Image 1 (cartoon, helix red, strand yellow):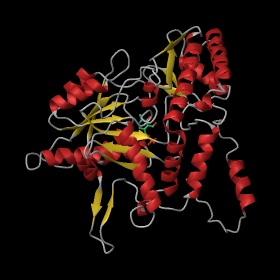
Image 2: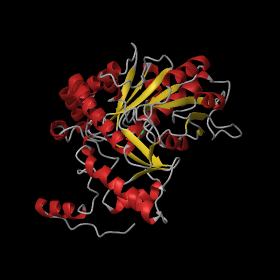
Image 3: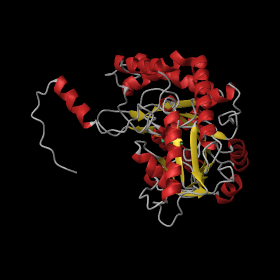
Length: 425
Ligand SMILES: Cc1ncc(COP(=O)(O)O)c(C=O)c1O
């Protein structure tokens, strides 16, 4: 990292803006649908509602939602309430508004660890830090997000990754065999990021109930959209609190909820588990401090924007979005199937596509796409190209499929060579 001389100051907005634009000039063309992850779009109106609401509450701090910013507090309660309703949570459930999937997952894993500790109080020690004791563990399919590894790293937990079945969903029997008395949680994704399919949540719920395990459903990508895919009749599998073994669930507003970043939610079947996630301290001169999130200060704008977008879209808006996203994904899938040599690695439950080739090195194809200005998303096992589609990607569909067909033909004609590419998020 380079040391930059501290700015002298006094630079006016026009110059600041032109500099910021200039340094971003080489950014990938995400507005043109050439970036397959990181960014999401429903339509221009949803974007504008989120933007306006965000900046109307730009300075408010959601940390002060109970003592100063009552409006933010009320909006946050309502957003969480909408989630409890959407995800079929029972009476007594509760949730928290966080900055993203990683934070939601971290808090849920802290709650699960503390629940294990409470259940085993006096009977066993917990955590790897305890000399001689084996670490507590989390059992999850290989496809679960690295946010679980991050939480495990910070809390000295062990991660056990299970294989998949042929349809690339978590193998529940393999997961069952990996659990033991020190398992604090089992995980299912809805959907998983790499292949875009929803793990068998019903079977995981049965396992959780049978063995008294905590089941966390990571619906970070799809949570706020999948119920609408189901409602419009796309046969999207259920994944939420309607299954009795689901004890916590994470769902990001800033992905397919189409709300401005940073915005996620994490829900607990029982408010006692929200209390377990909550960090409390009272040792310093300023008195009691408590947050159900890792963050202290939180952007009030993100809460206000989520409230505004959810109320703007509502059931009809999200169903309409589901229709458009579904039709676009079907069109991408049909286009991919029409290209000689392409194999879809999974049938998308939502809008994530993952495909490769039995005859060509798909990374060499990805390299050709990159040369044509696309940022290729890659998977490693199996070797594949990956895209998380939102409405940003609809105008680019024809160009994408045409460039892909050309890239396939070129690799077939010229040979693969060394792509130099490797899968990375
Ligand atoms: C399935 C899944 N879980 C969790 C996350 C982490 O979310 P965030 O990047 O908001 O922390 C992601 C991000 O893509 C994800 O795909």
